[in-house]
Image (cartoon, rainbow, N blue to C red; front, side):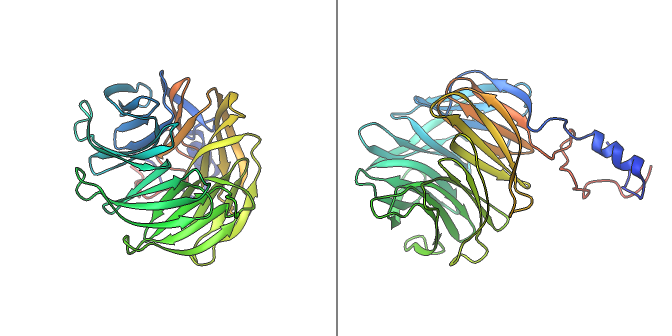
Length: 348
């Protein structure tokens, strides 16, 4: 489809506006089942659950379908996909957690390459540059960010770590920094830690932002970290890693499980005190100092995960399976609102 260029014409603007999705978020597909964690790479969504990992073909978002599954020894807490492998952080009620490396190069036949355990809860995992970063907590209430060399997937090995006062509950990696959301421990410490991981064997804390509360998830985009508390979302300027600074905050009336950020929006997976209802809330963060809710979609479930990829938002619930939404601010044909880079420069 060739678009005409925007000119000084109100009619042209109205024409393009009509192509925008009417609802935010707009449901486009659903896959029944049970899943609580999700990551998306290319045409596939990787769904973690209490029993294992499922791979779903989402090349047609309106008709997703499961193409492969693999069982895991313990419930999946987080999933990250990189280079033909899925990295699953797991934990069980006996305070044993760890990491499973799963070969997903053939989506219809995923298989476990290696799993290893460490004492404590493994809450989250992020993968970057041949390393997996695992957010951990132990029974004492202290936490640690563990750095695992996964350049040889069949032989992952821990190469570095850094302690946090509260549980390291979530981690995101961007460039040379890891951003760790921490719960409050016996000595406080709830908030955001910015950690220099340019030397993975010697990660070094660079900055800390105190939430005066527990932080449960973090997403990073465009020089900002979006930090979820138990209830509420903060926008943090991390352009100076040694001095992260709060810019804005918005209340959410429900408990946050997971967040993802893309193109000026933060997508929040929430549940109402571990009971129905639950669902997806959308926060417009295009003005970082004044984040505001832009829409919501009610589901159900007690554990939810969220990811964004290819102009779509993927929400998992342990009751209803996978929901797929068109991302807010995205044209029906896939172009993002305001992005004219792929438009024709010539009127045909």
